[in-house]
Length: 339
Image 1 (cartoon, one colour):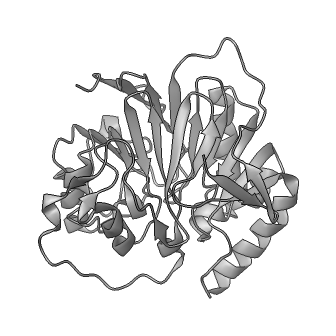
Image 2 (cartoon, rainbow, N blue to C red; image 1 turned 135 degrees about the horizontal axis):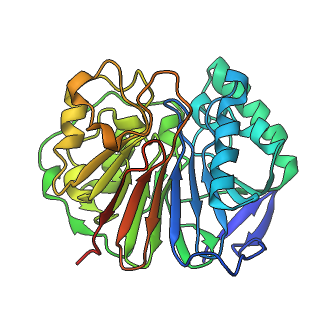
């Protein structure tokens, strides 16, 4: 196991102590929290250890911290063992300081210093740094493992670097890399984003946050370093997924953490829906400008522009069977164990 750097001191990557609820279900739960086009994903392991990936927006009368705390209550957790900030854009880190004022956070995880010279990024990063005194602080590197009991959480991207060796299940040549592909280089915080692969038995969930297009290419070409996954949170809220990624990942279910006005580009919707082997697309919001491109109503957590912030809950078993539950309409769908 790698060592993490915290406050300039090398620390062994061992689990932060957490009270274990012996009555907790022996499964993995993932809560996709509606932060109106931002990002906030709560992961709760079988031993009740918890990881929040991103903290949503600042402002809006603390809408996003409120929704995160509500999801934690529904999950039966009173503290966060870890909070991972994938990048310092406002929709990922903005809500972290106010959230940290309300609940105990054991360890803050990130990719290191802010790299973006914009007013919002510098302002939000400065506020985020002030919260680090409330807990431990670890800087992640590709290849690190975030130590949670009974769950493997592997860092596959951070600070502009990608894993160099495939994770278990990855490494096959990617036939979709043959065509010459290009896109404008992304020099924003997106290029620094922390991406994680979460594995529970045979169940695999990939969250690349807003990882830049070119960086995704490094994970996929010439070899797919990740392998296939059961569940995928669409990177960059579903915008401009490269043609090398989804065919290689082959996710059974994709979750789109979109807002009421994003995304609305028909080509992006078509690319996500055409993912080979895709059984269902679930959305956190009905996209007002997407019209018929939206997934059917039962698979959408929030249908009104001004909503109550219903969330999606995934319950996964070690055999890779899992269920997605929509808290708005109580609709749920079960997905069989992987072969």
